[in-house]
Each structure stands twice: as C-alpha cells, then as structure tokens.
Length: 549
Image 1 (spheres, rainbow, N blue to C red):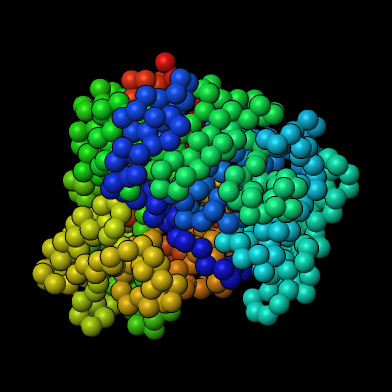
Image 2 (image 1 turned 60 degrees about the horizontal axis):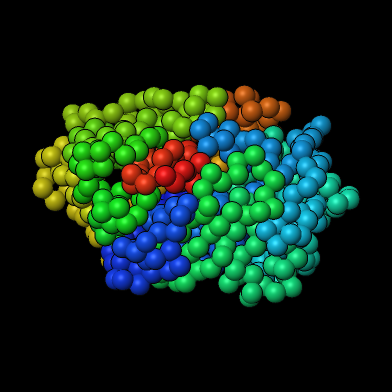
C-alpha cells in the first residue's frame, strides 16, 4: 500500500513534542508581545512551542509543532470534536456515497480564507492534487493514496504520467466528486486531518511568499514568524466556523528546553505549556496549584522488532518476542517514571477511541501481562535471545527515553536472570535514529509509537502493520492481515469495519512484530492569567476556548 515512509512517533512525529532547553526569547529577546519576562499584549495567550521541522503547509507537515499551527489556521471538510474526537462536518455540508467508493462532496457557502478570497471546491481539488504529486515532494502525499489516479501522479519509481488525480472532479464552486481506488467506508472521517485542507490561489501564485506567511481558513491567521523566537497569530476576521476564538490571539514562543518553559510557566511568563518535562510530573499538580491537566490522548508507545532480519522472522523467534513482552513490568515502569501519565497498554489502539471507535481493552490478552516464569519458558522454547542478548534502541535527545529504556531492560534482565540480557543503545539525535530505522539497520528492539492522525482504529493499524505501509518500520508483512484490512475498508458501515479491524489487530498481536507498552496521556500546565484550558484527544491545547483574564 503506502510506499513513503513517514516519521513515526506522534502526530506524525513526537520528536519535537519533547524538544527542549534555551530559547532566544528566554534570553531577553522576544517579539511583539514583549518576549519572555516582558509585558504581554492584552488578550493574547502565550504558549510553549518549538520550531517546526518543515515550513508549515498542509501536505508537508507531519510533526506535532507544525501540526499545532495547521490546526489553528485551517479548517477542512471535517473537524474533530475537541472533547469526544468524533468527526463532524466543518466546511462540508454533506459527503454522500451509495457504494463506499464514489463520493459527492458539497461545501457550505460563505467560507473564506484569511485574505478574504472564497473557499471553493477548486480550493480542495487543487490542494489535494498538489499534495499528491510526487515532484512536489510532500511528506503527507500518501494520504491521497486511496484516490483513483494516485499511482499515476505518485509512482514508486520514475516520473509521474499525470499531474492531477483522475478521481477528483470539480462540478461547481461548491461541489466536487471523489472516486477512490477501493471501497473505504471510513474515508470521510479521515478528512479532518490537515493534509486535506483547502489552499488559496496565493499558495500557487506566490508559494515562497505564502510559506513565509501562510494563509488559511481557520480561526486564526498568521501575523508574523521569526524562527527561533516566536509566531504571532490573531483572530481571522473571515472565519465562518462556530468555534471562534475567545481570546485575541496566540503567541507561540520558541523554546529548546522543556524545563526552561516550565520555569517560565511557574514565573508567570508563559500561559500554556503542553507536554511537561518528565522530571516535573511528580510535582506538577503541587507546583501549579491545580492548574495541571492530565488526560487520555490518542498516543501509544511500543517496541518494534526488525522483521526484515531473518533471525526475528521464524516461529521460534515469535515465542522469544512474546517472552520479552511478558518480561516487561509495565505497571512498575509507568508508576516509577511517569507518575500517572501513562497506563499499561492492552491493545494496539488508544482508550480515547472508545469501544465504538475500535478500542478493545484486553485484546492483547496474556501477551501483555507481566509473567516472569512464563517469559523465561517462552524465551527458552524459542531458542533463547539471538546471539544471547538483545539491545533496545532509541534516540535520547528528547523526553525520558533513556529512563524508560533502562527500566524496561532492567525488568527483562531480572526476569531472565541475566544482567546483560538486555542493554540500552542510546542514539544521540532523533534524526540519526530515524535514519537508521528508515535504512533498516536495526538489529534488535527499537522504540516506536503512534499519535493518531484521526480518531479511527484504521489509523492505528493500517499505516503501521499493512505490508509496505507508510509507517511500517518493522517491515512486518502478513497476507492475512492485509486481506482483513482490505475487507474492513470495504465494509458498509463503521460497526462492521471496526469488528474486522479488531480481527486484524488480534492477528497482529499473535504475530507480535511490536510489543505494546503503554498508553500516553496528554499533560499540560497553565498560568493564573488564563482559564478554560484543556487538551483535545490529540493532546493539543484547544486554543480557541482559552480565555485571558
């Protein structure tokens, strides 16, 4: 299916979410709102941020910090309820189909971009064609893979034989049709993801200028961005949605250290910090006087195996993998390191999906239960660890990866009664870590994880475990899993699709290319200057709801 490899870990990539140390603004620099320690503008929310990996554009942003901006300046056909995560119509008035493959999309009238130009059917079709075209090198291009003609505009090799998707047709200013290359009943609910956002004419006529100051149709508009310092956003006066900002705007202040941001929050120099430093979680509720948020989020963490390595593909190796899973005391690790912000995982999805969305607690069965005696038996029956020992690899430049890796290895070593059965292999940077994964250089266990792009079980299963899928970092391939996923996509309704996806999930756990570790909560802190602060199911602050006192 998906040939492109995307960054695996959170909203596309959690690398930046833990990014973290001194900032230009923290050194007395600053922006129009006074900089850290300066006098904030009335009605403006000051929020923790790190510079995004790429220039902010819908089809070329697949990490947390850039995605945060896209959520603020764009609205697509759908949006996700900030409390339930359910897909709701936004720019779309209706999305109709009789066969789960051919869709007619009708837009609400009156939507405009922040430059005052209208949002039309062509705004969506042109944006999707641009995002899909291989020569535009958009990291989110694979989101358009289900639309007929994708193979022609985005071939695995060579030049494209077409520049536009044959499955897209503009009917009039407010109507367009989409033909998929397969049945996919859940497809409409994916359309709240930012890759599907519309684009104004200025994106195509002055692309360089647009990148410097993006123009969208969301509740905020970008006023300025100084890399390494801050991005200033204010209300979009043309916004047509019902979630208009309850503040005058947001200043996203750039930090390179979470602890510095946390200190500034305590001092009243920042209003919102999401993803608090792991070392501060134990005391955050006390430090912030109750202005602390800890809630479930659509984020999971796991350990994957290099299934492209023949020593990990055999049936005996599957027993070893299962034994290693049972050797990990998940509750002990989460309690000691994460202080209530993680919960041991019992399936491959997230509790925020709910049962209707596909989350099935306990689906992992005994495979995810700590059982030292059974773990030793399985590893022995499987022929022991390949080479007598195993490594656990992760980048260690963000978050608390070194701490939990050491804790997991200690648990495995205690279980197998061998001090060096598991050793930690720290990689200095996220980019180096990702390069090794993409190059299939992994020899033992390595950190993987997922933050949902949209709240569907499909998003936790297909991109990670379908053969050659975009984020299938383990190289796992199973014809039965692929077949069940195809059947799920062709199901006539969500209920049947969910049941089939759970069958695929159960089969994946039987094969166990990855060990589920824990569900990750979203956490944040806020200042006394603001109120009505909460996170959405993606663990992103709902900026439009925040009030400034």
